Length: 169
Image (cartoon, rainbow, N blue to C red; front, side, top):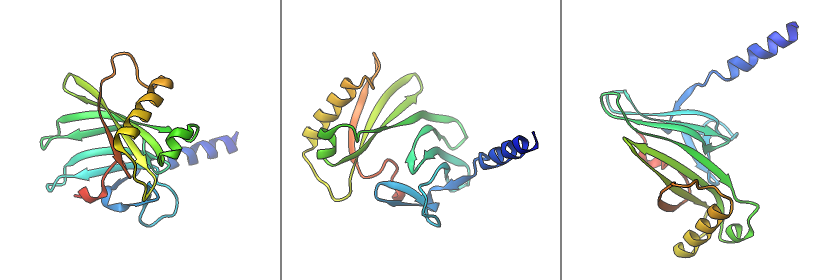
């Protein structure tokens, strides 16, 4: 019984959820790492306004934005919120052959409007025909039933990362 309590306590401590700043991250091979670490980053990230209030919060799992995110206004009001939904495409040769590392569906809600941005993460130094990638990604999402009835895809963005580290506070 004592072992169970110790393990549970250690689990709670490890899930404390320390938040880091975007400036604490580096991008390597399409994954995010703490600058001081060699393990793909899992945890929370905050971006601050110049007055040190929070402008954005993101969650990462295994080096990829994953889960709830929120954007705030200068008075702390929620401007946008949503979630990242990473999709492993290694089971699809057509996408892998196009140099696609992964997809990340960014569900966005602003006021009463909801939509999805599809972020296509390409392997480094890989370029392709954007239209071909968009068509293959759309086909894949439809085949895998990743989009629900009524989901509106706002855009398909081709990138090497979901969150640009150049937009540091």
